Image 1 (tube, rainbow over the protein chains, first blue to last red):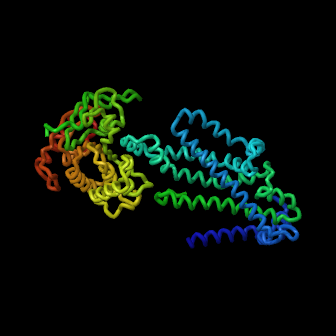
Image 2 (image 1 turned 90 degrees about the horizontal axis):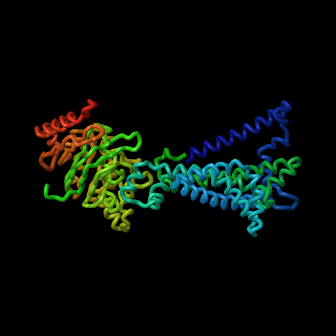
Image 3 (image 1 turned 135 degrees about the horizontal axis):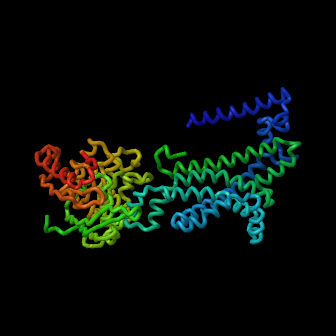
Length: 274
Length: 264
């Protein structure tokens, strides 16, 4: 644990040093390719972090407070989106594993669903659900779920099929029902696959929530903050960079939550953990 | 033993595989009586595992009849009359030793107290006390196979089907497991049908050895193993043991018209 912490800190320090070294080099030789290096294109990292502890506007709260609230708001959207997407993805997989006909008929459309850019779907979701009187953030959750369900469905399907054929024969010899086979064999066997999917989905749902806020015109989340600070990039580039750091931290937090859950839930030989 | 009821009764059993039209079994007639230990032996690929699976209603025969405990095989499976042990232990990785053994008991809706009581007995029987909380990947191959035997015996099935259960083990472990299996067989009231391709193992364990020919498998002959019970390490050194091994080997040779390499 200590060792892993040290490695993490060392890598972080290395990246930090790389950024600052490139910046210093760029300024010293007046680098113009691939971009000009200056205060605006590459702010100091300590300035980005420093910006978090500056007031967000005159006499306003600190930026970190504003972004913290925005992150919590986006986290709610993302978490609901994750639960929705993971649930739907898992149910789709359960349905598909029991019917080759469904698998053949439905799978192409499930794949096709992911080839449509999220930005094309999002306005429609907002219009549909907004018209039902649902809160705006829920539309964002649905958009996040749209990105989440796919990796879960595909990996869960693979996982539900992953048990040894003889393990199925064993169940057969007990005259086990489909339901029993599902709960006692297929689902536990699918867990490592499911958690691999959850890790992809955990970061995807955060990205989905941030992007979903734009067409939904939601100001309270990180998407709103990014849009806002985009406009002030010329005068205060550090604010956008600081927002990106918070957004990244949110994604990492979601990912780590999944990793932790996996350690608690999945009982496997150590080499099964990814 | 002849007055005992037949646990398994096979009548002119034939099995063709749909794919390629290969005939696996041809006209198999066999009766296994209660408390018997019957080994099926034959060259690899002859269909002895298929025969075992047909008895267990895991594979359907093309024609012929399988009666187990006086019922159709299908009904016997629904009544949970079978315990099965495969060549690999086929334990559930996510379950501890105790939970693996309890699996069939959960299927039978035994309550928790009764389950843990029974698991305790089984763990004693296969001499794995102290390993209840271990996961399969923390055990050696021999220990895993003992868990799998305990799981098969946990609900006291009238018929135990074993498909080369010790095939993946080294010779020393295998001989020790043979001894244990005989002890377990004597302590329980199970009837065992045992698939193997080791002549010595078949002779050592069985009350009868059924010799099968290469595909399509027919019964070349049945050898009554009249070695005294209980058997022990000395059994393997008796003159009679070698005579019986030779008898089985010759039957295998008779059935082996294709000249396939014989197992040692």
